Length: 416
Image 1 (spheres, rainbow, N blue to C red):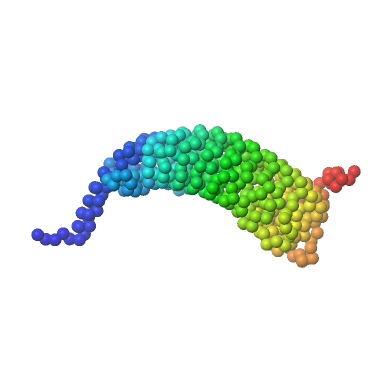
Image 2 (tube, rainbow, N blue to C red):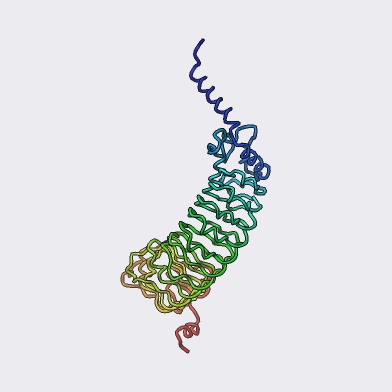
């Protein structure tokens, strides 16, 4: 009897594994996938489901499926990763109604649904049914209804992204305090999330990234957890004064709310904070920094525009690459440190239009220098006639008036 040639032996071994694997997927998971396919569909231009042929083995041939051995029964495989859609920029994604059968894939560790037009509510029992879930991302779809409180029962969940849907109602307090592994929470641009930000945020044990922008949250900003590094709550209706202290943030966006009172100086002393966006609020009083202009602090952007800030601009803000002070009530002179930063190229944008600034003097160090072509500078509509170089970067809305009427400047300075 002639021996089996090695290539044929390899082919035989592959076919054996393939045939064995075809029957190895858990019947519960196979049925759940079938139900998902019956409820969702490719939008025109998408071909994601073209590989979902149930006459073949889902673990080997289905796009978006990863299988792992069943811990309870070695005869079966379970779906451990489910990714629906391609995520490619030229793909329109999937449509349909989110099926509750996703909750039957109880071995899932990752569930990702890329942008599309999937609607329906998040299954109420999703958290209780998927105890191993580490990543849940369903962004840029049309999900409705509340965030299920059951999502608080996921001990291994580190990332939750439900942004850019149509979710409604309040944020479950336990979502912040009962998920010990949660590091990233993104609920931006749902619009219908309402009520206060739960005070339990303070006790979130490992939260690093919180993005709640573009919703309808109200009330005060509660004290923040010490672990937080990224915070955006812009485009809400949050109000009141800010907490006196902040954690070691790297990004802070509180813009487009109705916060009031003074801006805490401690914000400007956070060593790793590169972006400070406080514009379009009701902040008032003097803007104070807890250091002088010779500090080593450096920011990519500081934006305090469209508030009611008064007094002279602090010289220490010359350390910002882009600085927006426009549409406030600042008075006095433009700090020489700002002008030097603009001329030496370390500050690329300086907007201070629509204030009550009265002096713009070139320091000796800038004599003979020109404003860099890359700089954008605007000082129109103040209590002075700005030099031509100080208006070249003005947006169209600030070009109508080079200086304020004298009576406005007299009133601002306490004159008659």
